[in-house]
Image (cartoon, rainbow, N blue to C red):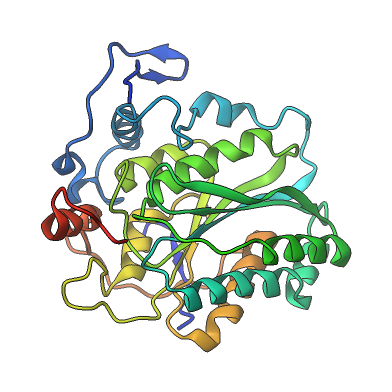
Amino acid sequence: MHGYIVIEAGGGQRDLWIAGTCLGPPYGPPLLGWAEDGMSRRTGPAMLALFGALVAFAAYPPDSASVVSAAAAQRGPQSADADDVDVELVLAVDVSYSMDPDEQALQREGYVSALTSPEFLAALKAGIHARIAVTYFEWANANDQKILLPWRLIDGLPSARAVAEEIGRSPYRRAYRTSIAGALLFGARLFENSGHRGIRRVIDVSGDGTNNEGPLIVPTREAVVANGITVNGLPIMLKKPQPGSVDIEDLDIYYEDCVIGGPGAFVVPIKEREKFTDAVRTKLVLEVAGRVPPARVVPAAAQAPRISCTIGERMWQQRWGNGLDMR
């Protein structure tokens, strides 16, 4: 598991730059097989993964909202010269069509309730600075991310209530396709303008499907983690995959092996509706407190990865080809 933790809760092209150095002419779109199973966390040097993420994303339009700049991410917020919050927390929430309206409401209500819970507020007060910076955005395809809550400071119950109310009154929406990689890249960019400097930086991504569009997930994750960001996961597993769908049975394993990363990264699978709010609250408490939960015992892995990190892209191609995708 390489230190990762699991809790059971039921257009145009452009030059490629790395660290301020241009590596040459524009690169073409990524090949699906380039990051096949061998690019799971168990294999492949980190630098190759970082290079691969940038190569994969170089083919997307320059004005894409999901483009991340490693140099910008390293600069940090311009208005804070020293740590002034315990964590800068990005909440990234799936609104693809695979999420039905009931699941969307449950997901939103889970965050709203957790942010004002006594457990969350106790963890907040126990921090070094006793305050956090948080932002909340919804995502679907690689070019569809919408910020519902710009960066806000939470330092007690009044500000927590204000944040929860701001999230809760936003209208619901849905969109096509599922690009976890696009969400991670978009989320990484948000730290540049948080207005604060946290002891830790965390992207908390929730969703009910695999990456099936946009950049490949593993090299993207490695690029984000290389900038000092921890990625935690909330795979939503309330429905059994239907025959012919592009959903998978082992979404929690997919998140463990392909999505999360960074120091103390963990996954909280949601398998029962009645435990959704409790799981979200537990996850937020751990993220605010900077604690690592007890590790689940996982059998030693074989040479082959437990799951293909390009399974989403392959399933989509097999079902839809170049036609319309209803996710």
